Length: 266
DNA sequence: ATGGTCGAGCATCGA
Image (tube, rainbow, N blue to C red; front, side, top):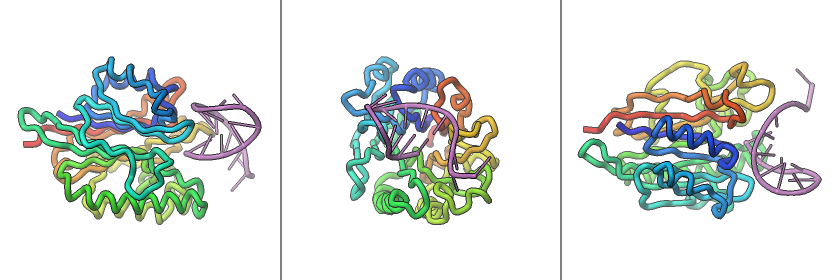
């Protein structure tokens, strides 16, 4: 049994009690976090060690920042997307030896905080598309080298109209524009599987709701947080779901965690 | 109706 999860926490220091409680209750092997919004010197690593988790992170003041909590120790850690902006801390990857009964295998985990893009046509939008292009170049190499490869995090892309509460209103807007969806489709044609869609085709399954306009209460959300897996893992997936409970908690992140579970690989 | 609310860190920016 292997459990992998991702959550955009929107400030790790504010959400730390929620992260620790969620870890204790769910016991994932691997937990990817985005928008930690904390410099490395101020990262709260001791709290995770006390919970029995290894942690790797790369962050900066006020914006961005990613981390991976893991039961297994990290190997071959990479803290930057090659050929992308090194000033924005949006990428961290590592390899983990998964026990898998008595038949261990190496799993490569790539944790992303894809640029938001602000508005279609803006400078930030162009930066987002360039960043995604570099990601695809990187993953074309990575997928050759790693049989068990997982790409997860906040992609800031809703892949299809099933993933948007009002697709007509959202058509052509940032997070749901055609070029962004094409990039997501590129990852699928590269050989990745959308873990949630391996389990369920339900519409209105969202991972992010705007803080404004009572969006969560009205389920006005988008599914922009994803777990992508190679076919070798897709064969053994047993469950994938979004834990909406945390979004309804006191002082919530605007995102909810996504969780995927796998049975042992023969 | 181009608003609204968070978080970081102290005026505004980013989402």
